[in-house]
Image: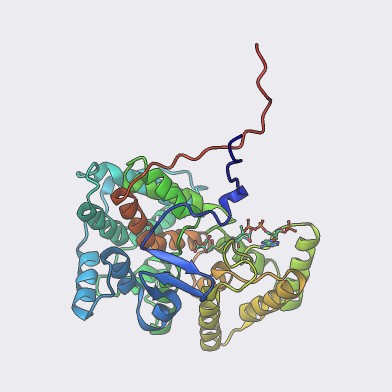
Amino acid sequence: MPAEPLFKPGLQDVVALETTISFLDTESERILIKGFDLIELSHEVGYVEMIHLLLNETLPDSTQTENVNQRLRDANGIPEEVWSILSLLPKATHPMDAQRTALSVLSGFDQDLNDRSVETNVHRAYQLLAQLPELTANSYHLLKGKQRIRSDKSLSYSANFLYLLTGKVPSKLEERIFDLSLLLYSEHELPNSTFAARVIASTLSDMYGALTGAVSSLKGQLHGGANEAVMNLLLEVGSPERFVELLREKLMNKEKIMGFGHRVYAKKMDPRALIMKRALMDLSEHQGDDRFLRMCEAGESFMEKEKGLYPNLDYYAAPVYYMLDIPIALYTPIFFCSRTAGLAAHVIEQHNHNRLFRPRVHYTGTPYSSI
Ligand SMILES: CC(=O)SCCNC(=O)CCNC(=O)[C@H](O)C(C)(C)COP(=O)(O)OP(=O)(O)OC[C@H]1O[C@@H](n2cnc3c(N)ncnc32)[C@H](O)[C@@H]1OP(=O)(O)O
Ligand SMILES: O=C([O-])CC(=O)C(=O)O
């Protein structure tokens, strides 16, 4: 008899591929990205440097950082046809679905669509990273029946992104914190969305196809959609005591609490969540309003005691985005914009070292019987 093939529900702990991009090294408690620790990077560099690291292999010097900024500023604008299509979407469309539609439409404007060389894919990634902030923010404004906001090229990448989302030029503190959130969201080994993108890319489908698949994956509440869900939970109640009561009720009803738990960190806090918690502390102090901080802290200690579960990045990113005045429905689309840097690196790696993904199943259906 052949040995029973290995089956792990949810592919837990299964190694699905080799990569040089990133690794959650739980033993040394590091999030390794191209040999650097993401948390250490978060103290030293910003999102634009992270883009360079993910797409060009090394941390940039100041000239290279300026080149990346220039490349992002000089990228092609968004074709008018894309806005026309977005303006036809039903008003109830979720911004993640608008983002997915926009990405899909952009593929038709790529004259080198069938070119999957590293050079063209890197160029494509820069184009998308340049276009996504406007595309994401303005698809939302259009759905709300508002005017599009034009990029302000005198601002940094992150300040401009935040300006497009809120219509207000951010303060230095707001810019720094938003940039930090983009950096923390930029890459995280092989979550569901990255796996989805790589599975799609492994058929030699193009980057747009792989990324639209990743948007769909990220939308779900068990993944990126959790940041939006966390904020809605916090807004259901107004005090730490009532928040804990709400969590208790949900646990009694066997509901999952969004923003807690993680397949890889499992019984430890996501190291990125701690950095976002500090950002929430800074914002709370600056705005003289610690309501969400106190609620989140109460929820964190309750969940630790009650379930031995810890916050993931989405738990603290949600109130941070709320205090930055960002519409809640845009939290997950922002996560996708940031993650495009990592996703693009994965698609490039997949195209460059490809083997089609085609696993097998453990059949539990009716045994054979003749007709
Ligand atoms: C940036 C990110 O995308 S991070 C992930 C964001 N997602 C969330 O915050 C959603 C809430 N969290 C979860 O649903 C899960 O923790 C996941 C999906 C992240 C990981 O799930 P898995 O590794 O499959 O763990 P699984 O769902 O099997 O949970 C294991 C046990 O812990 C419990 N558990 C895990 N997370 C939670 C939670 N957030 N609330 C309540 N219970 C939970 C499960 O009910 C299960 O209990 P049981 O063994 O008694 O049935
Ligand atoms: O790693 C995961 O499974 C989910 C996650 O935290 C991320 O994508 O940032």
